Each structure stands twice: as structure tokens, then as C-alpha cells.
Amino acid sequence: MSLEELRYPIGRFQMPKSITKELLLSWMTDIECFPQRLRKEVVGLTDAQLDTPYRQDGWTVRQVVHHCADSHMNAFVRFKLPLTEDKPTIKPYVEARWAELPDSKMPIEPSLIIVDGLHQRWSVLLSNLSDKDLARTYIHPESGREVRLDITMAIYAWHCNHHLAHITRLKERGWGV
Image (cartoon, rainbow, N blue to C red; front, side, top):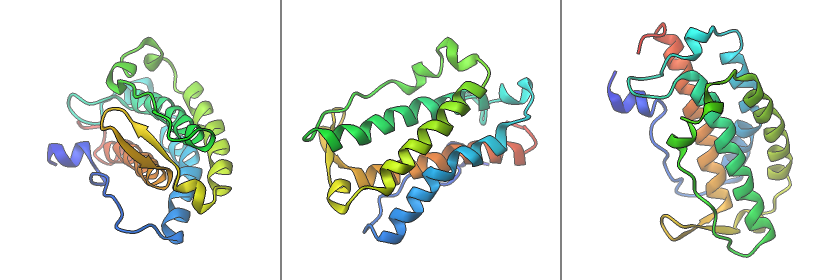
């Protein structure tokens, strides 16, 4: 398996050519169901399995779980800011450094609880957004570009499936890196 396939097991994010109601519903479903899907894959894993990287020089399963909590907390804020402010500039963060902090080495249950609660709230928010809400934007300071909330939903639905595939593909390989 190539490094590209290990890094991007479902492929890199592809910007949709057009956004349909069906795509929006699919993305909402991916975000809503992610906590249960993640929990199903990681509960019962041993510490040795949790501390196995999904690829050489990649994050461990434990770090991926904690990263999902970190990333999705940031995503939730990225949704709420443009719903309450006009074109706010979001705060990026250095994901790789967050994944090295001491809390990324702890048991995964606290992060699973965060993902459970956060995704419940996020799902309620998403299911109540109008087309006008989904067209609201924030500024990403690294690119200086405006990012629409419907595209952000697509990105985070992909993100859920992307990291879930890191775990499932590792398990399919029999924990071989």
C-alpha cells in the first residue's frame, strides 16, 4: 500500500461541483453517525492497539481519537462564529502539536464522550440551518479566503470518514503498519 493510500485511505477531499440537498443530507448523516461508528471501532482495543500508528510516522489510534475531539470542537466553533458574526476570521491551530500534548496520551473515553456530546449538538445545529445560513462564511487566515459553511460541512463529513478509515484499514491489515 502506498504512502498516499495510507495517508488518505478514502482519497483527498474533493470539492463538490455543486451542492445538492442529497449531499447536504449525506454530510449531516456522516457527522451525526460518526460518534457511534468511531466508538464501535475503538472500544475494547488494548493499549498496545491504541498505541499503534495507522502508518509509519503517523499518529496512533489513540492520537486519532483525541484529534477527532480536538478538531471537531474547533469545527463546531467554526460553524457558530459565522452564524453569529459577519465573516469572522477563525483561529487555526497546529494539529500536529496538539497531538503531542500530554492529553493525547491518556485513555480515549473522555474524547469519545466529547465527540458524543459535541456531535449531538452539532447535528441539531446542522439540521436547523437554512440555505442562507449555509451560505454564510468565515475567513481562514492561512489562505485569506472566505469559506462557506456548506463547504465546511463537506470537509468535516470527509474528515470523519477519513480518520475512521485510518482505524478500520489498520485493523484490516492486522495491526501491521
